Image 1 (cartoon, rainbow over the protein chains, first blue to last red):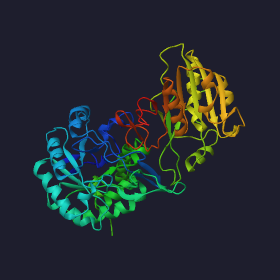
Image 2 (cartoon, rainbow over the protein chains, first blue to last red; image 1 turned 90 degrees about the horizontal axis):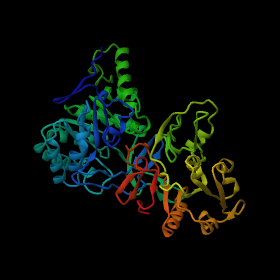
Image 3 (cartoon, rainbow over the protein chains, first blue to last red; image 1 turned 45 degrees about the horizontal axis):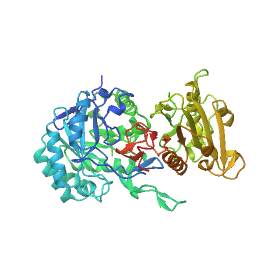
Image 4 (cartoon, rainbow over the protein chains, first blue to last red; image 1 turned 120 degrees about the vertical axis):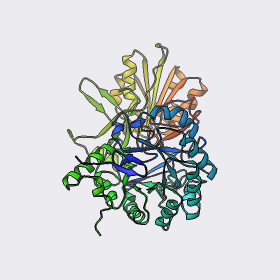
Length: 303
Length: 223
């Protein structure tokens, strides 16, 4: 038997495969397709202090080997989550993280504090990297100073696993990673989407209502791999890698680059059972290579 | 499967067909175990689908979305208005209406007679009226200019096609106080309520067309 368990600070996942925020709903959307309990962890949709309607349609543009989105954190707010969604999902036998975003420092603090009280939410993913909101979001994650401030403030009120999700839209992602590690992040996930744009040449207009949006999918995988490798070398806390993972081989590449776990995002839209295939594929790879634990490949890139 | 629902088709082996394609269910032939999809070639995805041969496998997620609702009054006289490839779900719905003993009429529009598809199939389920912009088939003009809208009364109207056409049909229905449902075709990434990309603005805020729709009563939409 191969041991797929991985450790994130105090929290153990049954395997290194998680689903990324905004690509897996609240898990319930996928219950018709897969057994949710087989997944290592799920990160539910970006949640803000107050309800957000998100950006106007059109919010999506398909691009070569990827897609742009400009959803803009549409959600019903943290109180609605606690009252209506949490009761429905708390019995899922997997580790549920809530992705938390905000327009102000205060928003992050209050929302995180409320989630701290939930028994079956062992962690939050602090989203300082959403490119699709006018205020806050990515603005917090693109300088060491503001990233430090928000992590420091949330760390004070949030006692469980604090994962911080970084933006790739920066000059030196390793510096930001070190800054959030210093302020008490338990783990670091990356990358959020790359800021991009699509144009309809016939109409001479942008395709997205917001003009720019976040690029995801295999198109960004080489950038994500490079950044995960850089960050894993720079910090001691576990790194959770994501960006264009479509299959087990992609996932294994992230593990080799130094990620302790991975998140599957856009692929969930195309193949709703992909997370299970990736878990099985990682296990098969480990068996084939005579490994007894997934730790036999984490960070084992030979350079 | 119900009329108005759709499928998500996977088109592999091209970087330009990364996402699945949402396609309306055109018809379900339970006797022959057939599901019909009517495809208009608009890009790489639909072109690749058009190149499929008999017995080629196709990866689908189905059925997705809600469905057209049957009129409450069984004596209702129903009009289905379609434009272009938007006629696709109306064939399945027409067969369903006929099976449920409703009087069903079709008003189908296209740029010219070559754009009017499946007329023989539609005629099996009700009377068919047509318009073409060049006058090559039926009355010349747009569907909302057809004389049948003045000469006959309908109790319920259902429409699918270009947004401008559906808005004009919805306006006609609103003015005449007629029950009306439209089927929207917003671009989607997933098709099952996960990505939140296909939203339309409604009286209840942004809702996903893939799960709350694609069929909406016009009184709910903020057009």
